[in-house]
Length: 258
Image (cartoon, rainbow, N blue to C red):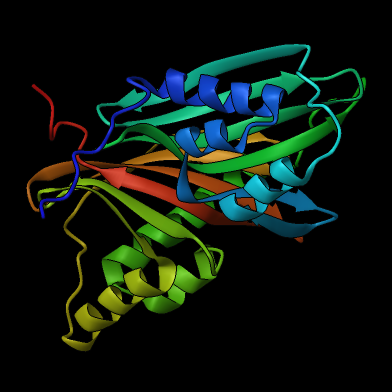
């Protein structure tokens, strides 16, 4: 039998983030599932260590709660960057006791716009985001390592510049609307190129933006590869004083457009 036609939800990245807000305010795991891709991780840094919560863990927390949901007193979202089917969004949610500052990767899938990565900072009442000395320069050094990892097809540099669980979501790459691979799968592809003695030092990369929010950050890069311009949106975290890439989306911003 033919596969059922996907039901599209959330016509814009803003709609996906608003669904996340409603899920939080109502404690609804069903609404949360409409906002996030099931593979997405929720990332934060706790006492210097990276913590990752899966969607299943998050759903179970909501479903197991016996206390009424506490809606936020204030919420704001800002699209930091959008090109075609890829977007980078910041969302700020406030309660009397604390504030969450989220950086999120949002992409257009066959089912509509979905959040595929979220990193957050928790700020206590009356507090502010921590200032991290040299964050911009340190992050740009990590991005330079990522670029060199591609140029040399180096699995070792991927390991050095990324967290082990970093997923790479691909949007409109070589005719595929949406899929994703683990870092190890990406490294296996690099290793194949490297074993054949191949490199790619001809493709020009640019770091277009870096956004720092305490111990989390986001970046935008682009590259002209085999005649196609691709963009990368990245989430980074600062674990035990070192920045690394923890989630990534990339793709052709013009593919699939009218």
